[in-house]
Amino acid sequence: MIYFLIYLFLETMMSVWIAGYIGGLNTFLEIIFTALLGIYIIKNAKENFFSTLTELFFQQINSRQFINLNLYPLIGAILLIVPGFFTDLIGIILQIVPHFNSGNNDEVEDRFNFRNDENEDNQLS
Image 1 (cartoon, one colour):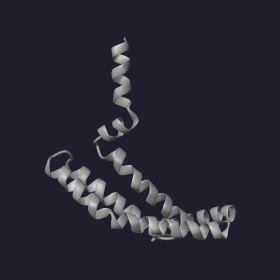
Image 2 (image 1 turned 180 degrees about the horizontal axis):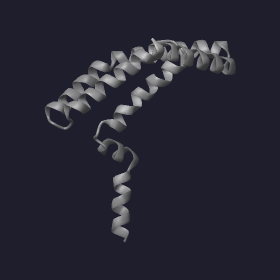
Image 3 (image 1 turned 30 degrees about the vertical axis):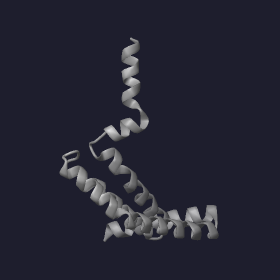
Image 4 (image 1 turned 30 degrees about the horizontal axis):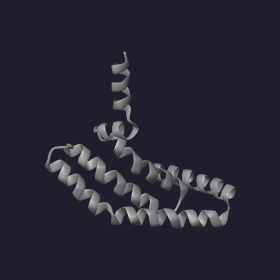
């Protein structure tokens, strides 16, 4: 019960502060946009599920990575549908976290070229 009251307090304070800063119409548009984004993510969750299931089958990821890559985005999408800035912030974080927390850093290294930069530095030395 206390956690719900803490959540309710944070959600109310954050929503009032941001709504006062950006205005009523922009707040309404943000609520609609994030709800549609959450619905879109849930509709595409099936494709993501089968993609990660294939990776699990071919042992490119382990079962923990499979759960992280499917569960966090689904919970995040549900939180994006719920109106409020605090839940939207948590929902966006849950969309990003599995890609850095999956234990498979090859995707992150390839995206930011960490590995290539290190190899070039070693070749120059």
